[in-house]
Image (cartoon, rainbow, N blue to C red; front, side, top):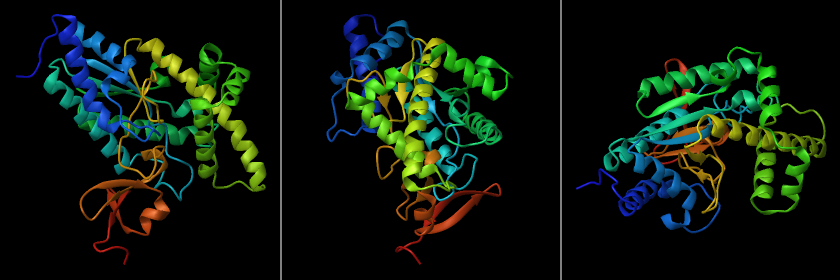
Amino acid sequence: MPLTTAPDARSTHVLSTAVLNLLLPHHRTTEDTSAPAGRFPHQLRRIGDFVRRGKPVVFTLPGFPCKSPNRAKVLGHLPDQGERLSLTFLNDLCARIGEIHPPGARVVICSDGHVFGDLVRVPDHHIDAYADELRALVAELGPDHLSVFDLRDVLGDLPHSAKRDRVLERHAPALDALRAEVRAGGQALALYRGVTRFLLDDTADFTGTRSALQRECRRRAYGVIQRSRAWGALVAEHHPRSVRLSIHPQPAGAPKFGIRLLDAPDAWTTPWHSTALRRADGTWSLLPRAQAAGLGRLVTRDGRPSHFEEWPGGPA
């Protein structure tokens, strides 16, 4: 019979471990080997807090900001099949948790597009449209397991630039401190390099030299990381008990649990930096639009580009 209660510390630990084991196959990490549940004490402790109180396990996932401005990577500025599949995966994951923990689970999508919009060169009206469509997709899947949290929930109808300034003033670490972390190496350096690479790849209209673009992207990368920390602090303030998920790779033992939403060529690819491709065998992958277009035909949904379907037997 499935465990339904947690009357003591032992059963709480057993059930918390069972919940975590449902996440482990989807751990997004740059490490080569899988890790047992015991190497994730932060997550076990947070999950255990919900289990002990008989409450739904709440996860927060900063992400789903906006589509990349590079049209060689994505189909447009609105959510498409990549987001739909990712939200379905999270919804199903919560349902599976509910099978062993009857109070269930829910994921709060902390959509952070307006936090970074000016740094990633995406206009605010595109971010608004993306966020509205994201909420519509969540509503379509049902409100039991998923919800969306963004700056509108915190700062209402203030101008977007004023919202960004407010978040930075209240929650951002100093840039000098971030630079010191990156110089020290480790995960901070890996994140800095990953963000810089994304900014380079997402820039489609730079008119200067490659070296000038690299310098600009390195500068902007510090701003993205600074605002990411600020957004994380704001999310923690509003959801203090939640289990923190991340779309960035995270090592075992980190306070954040990196989660892979869909199959992709590397640990950094996300639905908003890529296009969904349905393989001939029925599986899905995330690839740059230009690459996916060479492997299959474009499929539309509700009059908009949705994804590609692989041609049987390979490219035509």
